[in-house]
Each structure stands twice: as C-alpha cells, then as structure tokens.
Image 1 (cartoon, one colour):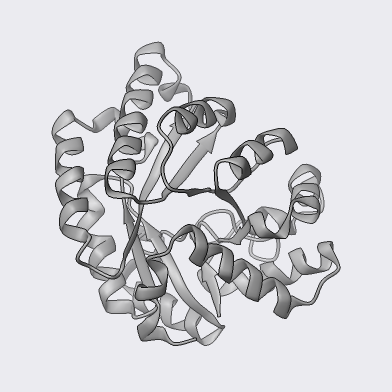
Image 2 (image 1 turned 180 degrees about the vertical axis):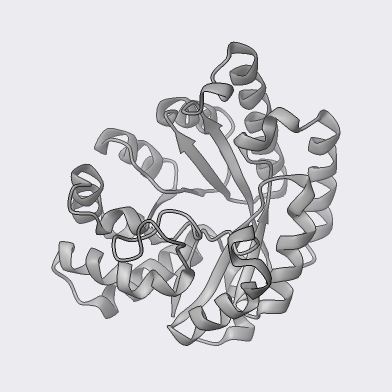
Length: 270
C-alpha cells in the first residue's frame, strides 16, 4: 500500500466529504493517511476522522501558524491529550510542529521567540513520550535542525522538504525522513526534483499536504490523497526505478519513522 504521511483531511476544502476523500484514496491504493493537527481546536476532529475513516491515523500538535493564538494552557493540554492518546492505536506522532519564518506576521522578534518556545516545548513532549514529530519548516531549515539536535525526538519527518543537500543530510543524520509530494511534479522545481532524484531512497516518504501543494495536473485546484500513486510515478521516473519498488521502500520508511503506524494500519490490510 501507499502511505500519505501528511494530509489535512479535516480541512474545510473537503467539507462534509472527508470520509469520501479517504475512501477514494483507499481505492487508489493509499492504505494509510496521516492527519496532523494544527491547534487545540482540531485535536478532536483529527482523532474522530482517523477513527471513522479506517485508513487514517493522526498526530497532535500546535502548528507555528497557530502559535500567535496559542497559550501556555494549550501546551499543558497537549501533554495531557498525548498521554491519553497513547492508548489509541490510531495516534502516531506529534505534529504539525515547527517554525515558519516566511509569513511576515510570524517574523516579528516576539513572535519568532514564541514560535521557538512552542516548538521546543513540543519537542520535549515528543521526547518524553518517545514519539516522532511531523515538522513544518518554512524559511527555517537551519533553525529547526538546531532545536531538534538540542532536544532530539526518536525521529520525524521534515514535511514538504525544500532545503539544500547539506540540510537534508542534517535531517537524515538525526534519523528523520524527508517528505515529497506535489511539488516534485513541476518541471521548474529543479532543486526539489534533484533532491528527490539523488537523496538516498531510504530517506524518502510520500505525502500530499492535501488540500494544499497540488501536483501540476490539479494546480491550482484542491489536492487529495488519492494522488499519491501518480505523484510517486513522477518520482519513480526521476529515479529510473520501478513504481512497485518505490512503493515498498517509502512505505517501509514511513513505518520505520512512525512505528505506531503498523497498529493503525491493521484495519486497512496490507
């Protein structure tokens, strides 16, 4: 099966059809979708969707874009929610967490400091409970790497990776995998395509970030997790390898970095 390691299935773009989106993904061979949370307000939504879909799991965290509205109480609530969620086989990681130094409103000194604080506190939660993280990294590759090295989780995924080869190696050295999705389908995305072609296959996992980062054949429309096999075909062609081999290795990579996925995937079969 394919694994979409990053899909916001609860996004408003899917409306009341989220379960239909998941079902169509399953029909396309996507046996598991990982749904990251973004704020305390959607923790229950991602948990419920994962329970209902049958081919989905979830992560809990506070996204850097949501940090401006977040409070210290949210961090305390996250730790407790994670403690409780450990009994849920569909719970697989801490995420989506990280740093965003792209949006102007998040780049003011006080907000950068708050982002760093929330990221480091969530790294501590991941480390305490032995969980991997799903990272959001925009204009902040080196800063995210610095904090992850200081408070290392058991592993993680650099979501929508778009850094340098040196930065990629930095993530690989600390046990992370790198997420590739719709961006790799654009012929002008030269750096991303070089990374996808030349990085060790053992470091790559598939993702969509749906409803965002649509592949070129859907751009600028809504992305969906059933696009994983077609996106993967582009990546397989870049690497000159059989699609079936890419499927087997990227699925194994996802299971390795998120061990709890194996329990979450039992209901959806091989």
